[in-house]
Length: 421
Image (cartoon, rainbow, N blue to C red; front, top):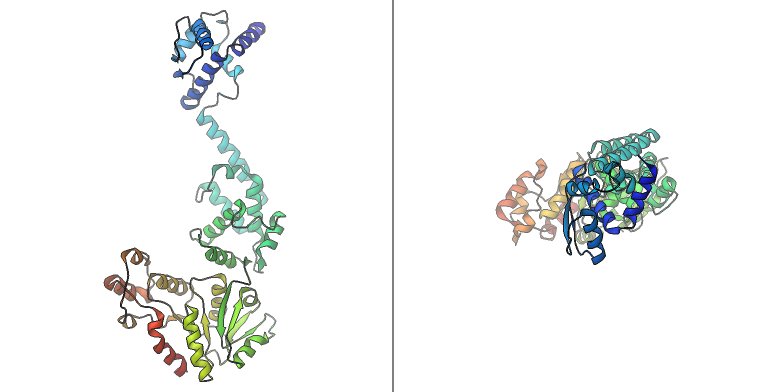
């Protein structure tokens, strides 16, 4: 090919913008087809563009036009540039425009694979490897395609998974160790969202949406997000550090018949938590603070100590932390919640996690007192797969479509804690 003629052709096209416009239109066709062809549509052509395009194609152009690649190549063959291979010329004129979608996808796939291969070489912890392999084989997908090509972002998450340990670590300190930025794993940051997705996958669950559930997910991997405002309420317990030292304020609160609002930071300091009156006594666990307070009124009035826990509705990290420790001692735990879809869901989570938990006034017999109607929209929230201890109750709830709240059972609960042995 004559280099001088090639340069002349490039100058000719650059001096006639409508021809460049036509070539770019064919580049879009190339991306779809994977080869040169198709028809280019040109609209709103100026008078000059009409003249220049008409001169090249050797026909009249009016306002807008459709040009096939066959016509374009035929017109090219009638110019002084006919000795230049048209397709090679176009590729040299606009080298970055002529990549087919298939070629582009392959290039992106190759880039993504190189990044994941490098990360798998750099990270050897069980959690990081399992997550990276899941990304590699498509078991999990990131929310945006461009995230797969952010090497620094993915490396930060993998480093975080490498650092997960049996020792509790506050989230900002954990993030700073992994990335140098204490806010990198905040829930509103890309790395924080990806870390949550990774931990949920590793746990075998969906990514939680509610903030408290996200905090609980982090807690299960010993990452503490909120250890002051996240709390449970307890009464009638003693607690000990890992070295056997007693944490005295737990016992002292019981001596004065006072409950403790115990934050997560204090719960995780306790290696062992057990009832003051001995491990053979049942531990009563209630869903809401109002029932807890009413039971405390009775216990205080009769100067009686019975181990009692309030979880305050939906389970938080502090809820799991306190339940983990009191269930570990092997005693008998009795849980009472509302007999509605939300209460059933909480009870199901607890029963699924601990073997030594029984239900407290959550039976079909108790449910006979239900009078509050449940709309169909709430009934749909009942779990489709039900724990055996809840199966009969859920069946009856679906039949009767009623709800029963703990307040209606308070007299029975008071009787139990006063006369428990």
